[in-house]
Length: 121
Length: 187
Image (cartoon, rainbow over all chains, first blue to last red; front, side, top):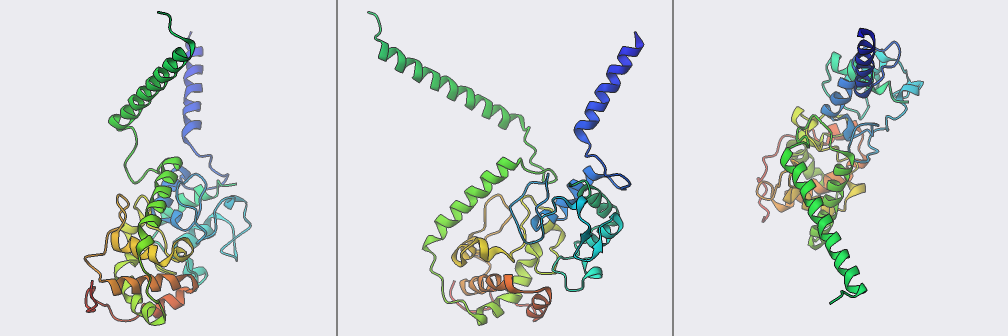
């Protein structure tokens, strides 16, 4: 009776994983679950309302719901992961007068944060 | 002697309420004493807990700030407030185009920007928050570190932040540092 046990174990593992993991958008690098924590640790949520992250209602920055569906970010950049990472790490490289500060986000953290934001539909 | 029907109804209601109260207290105590609620700042508050704490904080500030009398706050006060804001507030609250220091980013609750503070609070409430701080939030009280005139100058500056671009903020805060308490106004 090895097969049913294996089946049950696999099923349990799948359920566990489904419970924990945010589904990664296709072709996206980085860890969205880690990114969700990281974006709070860089205070993104203080200006942006982000689905899945607790905080005050704020309209200082634009709400980030549906980011995965947006065609452009920052008004001019085509929305893809590389551009999103660039915008997160150094907004002034895209728009020198942007009020969004560079928060000192590392490459890896920006990759993970973008991976989470791009899951938002 | 048989108990009358109304007495029985009242007795049942009282006992049921008591039992429910005791059960609720037991559940509350268990949750508190077990330490299940994560107090770490890398996890988020439950949304309901956050909203409750935030609402309570807002009611408390509104109530306590009612007796504060706001002086006239003009351009001169705002200009005087700019370097004070930069030296004492921007570390946690940032400014247009200016990031907070690391400790201001990763607090829970996050201190947040003040560019929209004047849409959320009256000047006297911003003054009260600055002067008295907010318990358990990381917001310090400045009563013994900034005098009243300096605190109002900061309020005047914060009030104007909603109209500032990143460039305006850079220009206004470019003046040399001011040591808190240097001005001689009465506390």
